[in-house]
Structure formats: C-alpha cells, structure tokens
Length: 457
Image (cartoon, rainbow, N blue to C red; front, side, top):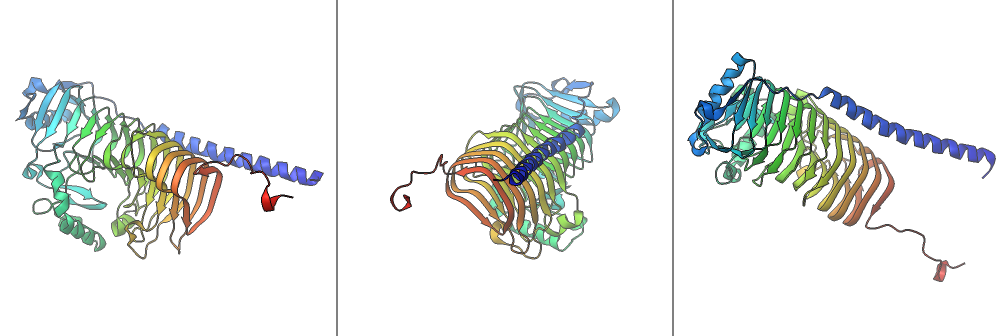
C-alpha cells in the first residue's frame, strides 16, 4: 500500500468511526431528550383509607360505591390518594378515575372485579383492536383526565378466565362489524357495541389522558388487553408484575400515544408483552397521530412476543427504544415488527440496544405481510438499529425480514448480534441497505482452516 492509499484508508477508517460514534450519541441524546419530557404525576397529599368509609375487606361486599364516593371527592379536595389496605375487596363494576386521583393498593390488598357484563354498562367511548367505538367500560377507565396514578404492591384481579375471556370464541361477527365500520368511516356515535356483542373490555384504559403513573402493582386475569394507553401522553409504567394467561392478554399497548416510559417490568403474558400500535387501516391513516417517543428498558420478557410494533399502526410509529432488557422465560418472537398492505403508515427510527432472549421461535422478525392479507397501502419500514442482541436458540429463524416488493424494507443496521443456533439463520426478502457488523448465527469460525487437499499450494 503506497503513502496516498494509506492516508485514504485511515481517513475512511476515521470517518467510519466518527459515523458510528455519531449514531451512538444520536441514540443516547434522543433518548435523553424524551426522558427529560416524561414526568410522573405528583401523588396527592390528601388521603383517604377506604375501610374508614365503609369498604369491607371480605371479598364479598361491593366496595364500588365507596370507591366512587372517594373519586368524586377529588374535585373538592384538589386531588385524593385512595388507600386500599390489606384484604380482598370486591368491586362490582368499573372504576372511572377523575383528575388527580391516585389508587394506592397496598401490599396484601387485592381488588377483585365482578363478572356481570351489565355492570359495565352504559357503554363508553373506547377503542377495540385499532377502531374507535362504544363498548363495555374497561374495568379501570380514565377519559380526558390528568394526573392519574395506580401505585402500591397490591393486586388487581380481573377474575375473567371463566367469564369475559370466554367471549373470544364468539367475537368474530362483532369484530368484523367494527372493522367494516372503520373502512366505511361510519360516524363514531353509530358504532354501538356492548350488550348483544362480545367484544371484551380492557382491564385498564387511559384515553386522552396526560401525566400517568402505574407502579409496583400486580395485574392478573385480565378480560382482554391489560393496560391500553390510547391517545395519551407523558406516561410512566414501572415495576409492574403481570400474571396474565387469558387470550389477548397483552401487557402494555401504547396507541396514538407519545412520551412513554416502560421500565423494570416483569412480564408474563399470553400475548404481546409490549405492543405499540397506532390505529387500524382507514381510521388510523386519517387520524395521523403517530405513537412516538417510547422507551422500554430493564424489562424481563415472558409470553407470546417480547416487543411488538403493529399490526394496527396505520398512523405510524417512530422513536422507539428497547434498552437493557432480558427474558424471564419463553417468548415466540423476541422483536417483532408486523404490518400488511391494508395498514399504510410507517415504522421508523427504532433502536434495539443490549437485549437478550433465551429460546424463541424467531429472534428478530419483520414482516410487511402479517396474516398474508391486504392490498393498496404498503407500510414504510426503515431506520432500525440493532446493537448487542443475543439469543440462545431460534427454532425457526434468527433474522427474518420480509419487505413489500413496491416498498422494500430499508436501512437496517445490525451490530454485535449473536444467535447461538437457528433453524434458518437469515432470510431477507425485498430488503435494501441492510448492514451487518460482527454478526454470528449458529456459531463463530475463529480462523481459516489449514490448506489441505486441492487447496494446498
């Protein structure tokens, strides 16, 4: 190599190093800017212990009237911390939170919800699988509220395995009707479900809310999605324990939401642990409110899938950070980005850093053809950066990317990826500008073999 070639080589090396450092700084700086904007609500200074207002910890007497009375006190008191001491409290219907309300479910306390569907009527404005409609009230529901929190080391128990959860097998007609209303732009007020339909309510839903905190509680036996964050912002979910084994028991579903911190969570969900969404099809594309600025860190995954974006994401998803996460058990897919040509929208600026899985079906999976359906609205999937991803065994695939022929997946960067074994190491279809640095799937060849046989010189 002559002097000029050497200078050019070292200049290129310095440039590459600078670009890598800039990308790292960009990720960290962007994440810090988001963290600076997320502030947990203050816990109200005024407090009330529910047993002093007549609630009985016997698991039989309906405590809902007491909760409702204390929630209404919030406006007069400038906020209220409702303390639930140890014991089992039966709540026969939904709790509708108000501004500046904190539910403090103390260690040893258990709130058990009733199973009579009529108690969750009248219907409320909500959303179901990416479509706005009126349906049974979520068990805990906050609509257009600020400074709401659920804290404490107690348990929220939906008691739904033998009640609401059984509706899934008969939901198809109502599910398809909701999607038809979405595609036909039916006015929201005409989308009346509830009685006569079988769309399961969410366990907890924050709808058009600001300044949210859910911390330390255990959530179990949910009727449908466990926590649904809908058109909301500035939300912190911390140190929650999920034990949710019913169908569609997603852990946390941010939808059309921004500035969200999900940290130190123990997931054990029969469906997606975190599923980031942004509306379905026509409605999502017309709403044009993306889910953005979402940080998932120091979590332990167990269940169907670890971190999912989609498939209802038609308004777009961007600025997602998955940091320093591990696993507590099996997940089918570790990182899963899914869409189809019904959705449109985009997925971009996704950062996966220092994440580890054990035994999975697929470690990293991106598809533009979820469920093999759809036409006319391909999703733009680009700018995904994966650094230090580890997996012990991927029974089906290590890295799978399935783009759309008219709009390929593009600009993915994989650095420091180790997958010990995989059925198929890698499959890339309609994918462009995919970069690999220090990636090994199925083992590492440390050095070239000795020259023998026909290769001998």
